[in-house]
Image (cartoon, rainbow, N blue to C red; front, top):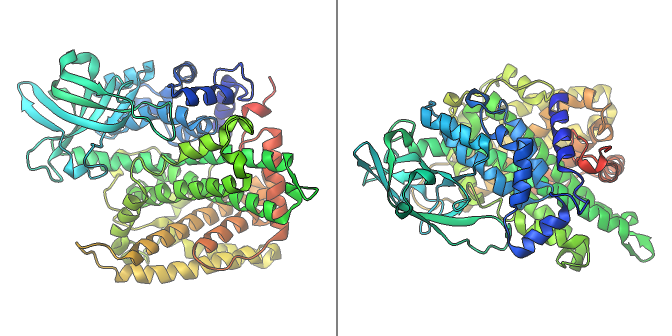
Length: 580
């Protein structure tokens, strides 16, 4: 992380204040109270707006502060580590606006940008009660009318459907529908008569209880022609391209939740004893924390590379976003579940340990893997890419793009929405780079014997990746049900993709990072060894113990928790560690 971004995040943390201070607006205790009452965190969202978080949802060309998607990624992650309900409720405005930012600007889009900056919530009207993720089956219709369109139908379940002043609505614009039969419209409630819409009741949810999860029904709501985003018939394409960005940035929610859960698990281990010994002294307890931390760092490496790929490898985001959205939330869910078993009953009780925060973060996080495409949707998207991934596997990777991708000290190139593509025509640069990265790591190990074990782990990943390429090459698209093995191949190639991201990140940063605040993680590739072990375990390949690395990881995890750092490969000070 570069100094500019680190300073931005520390300033944001300082504005929010120590979450352990009950008098602060955005405290853990206040979030717990709001959750139990199922109340939306209005005061907290106003505090976020007073700092200007919403400005990072809007491109600078439209008056906002968004120049790199790393900024909203890290800012939303910062909010999510305190309370996922707040992150999802406030961050939905970012998701709702994305469709407008990737098409040619118009006066309506400029007006939307201004309203977002002013603090007006935006919702994204995609799903419908009877169709879920099947966007092509959508029944909400937009019929041409004098000067514009009439929109009729119901969108449900929609985040901020009631609170949001503006919705970006996907509607069927030709009776037959199809790939060119849908459009996206900006619908501003304040420009409609009260009879043209009504908001549906809030749905009571298991997690994110305070969020506005509801719906909206339009009754011949008339919007002018300027409310159409992009060219006619482009709506579905615009949504699918927008999802490549939103799915990638959803990983920030998982990383924030993982940070929260890990801190609670460390606190529990420090406070509890068994057989007269601290839990931290027991090998099994240490192993649970180490595996969780390694999963968290692997997810972070993948998510960081994913967020920068939006700029550096834009045309490959159909692959990258599917991998990130599948892998990071699903592994974080598993990690939190494992930590829940570690905490035992205290993970579910409200008034016994940490104000019941663990059961809240566990409940809240389950939604992350569902919205913007669930695991099945993302694995299916990846399966559709198999032929190209295999066919382009011998293509030379773009060295310049990869240098810019992995070097976190350098700002990524400007984002060019025109480079987004529904299918990656060149496969995956990350997968093509893996043999070269493994070779560089192996060469480095010849002069640094401590790296030999991690180089061997990387070699095993490469061998499995080669085998998976052969399976992908043999895959043939079918209209009938996809074979179960194809989904397993998609799961495994996602793990290999994450491994490539992690190796590339370590190679680009280890020299600088070894002298930084997380230096013990980077020294002798300790975090990379742990991350690759988790990848190999997921692939069904035996892991290799690393006692020195485990000790370094556990020490860093505890230090980051106690000294007020984010749980990260590139940590910054959190509010608990900032001097007032």
